[in-house]
Length: 395
Image 1 (cartoon, rainbow, N blue to C red):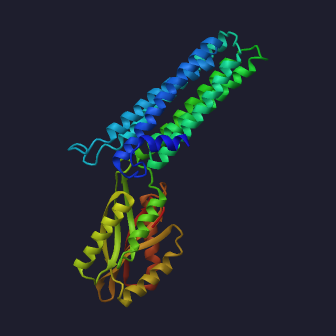
Image 2: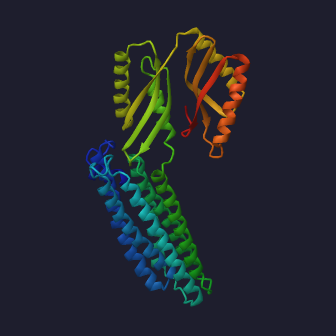
Image 3: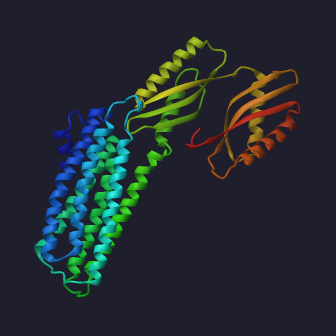
């Protein structure tokens, strides 16, 4: 309820998440709420840690202070990512949002390593942890606050598809785990005299480091060029095939230049005997409608195919019959026959599963085997093929 209230209260037209200004407002609100809440938690835990002489609580307090820096970086990331395109960056600065998430991840890891060292010193030079009910209750309250901020950031991150806000949600969830460990160390100190505080502090630090590693992995993926969301892929292909005269779609490539800044290209198979002007109008319409529906910029390449010639249809069926014995092949496209008389070329593209270990030598071997099998049916035909790798999982 509180999350919805804050979103509706401070974000104008909050439901229009495709709007750039609305999206930025989500990022600013998430960062601002994180700053305020983490400053309160830092001050509270630092006081509690000093009172109880608990290094684990103090470590947890400074973890919250690092979260303040993380929230500031998140705000800066959204601010810089919203800069318009310029001469040096014609597709905008959207990836800066991912970079800000990467910086936050490194901060989390650095904090974790620092407190491993501090906790280890606590084990070597132990001092008794003093249990007090009020500090213990305050730690429990902070756990509740972190659970809320985690859900808050996750809700907003999903609403605008922001990896930065979802990373902040994961970071807050790791704080819930670490604070729970701190509460446990306080409770156990009633019955245990040896320096369990230091051991719990090391456990908390390991959790923090692991959270940082997970965040790095998540924020690095879009920067490195991760595979697109399969629902988006299927949606684009399904929408394209709904237009008149478009009978096939393949070779979809999507480039991510930041949230809401996606560019793509795809090949559309169209009849070769239709008017160029007419099919060009259909392709233009498809580009416009698909780009608007999926919030991206799409370019469609036309591949004319012969759908009426009986020889082409019969040869294609024979080819499919041969290819079914090659399990690595998923599909074919751009099939055509070139040449005159008895000596002709069957030209087509075959799509295989993406496999890094499948080398150029393997491709040549596959082509050779396909040609051998085709020669049994068409002795005077040659197969001229291009091997496409399925990088996104759908054709």
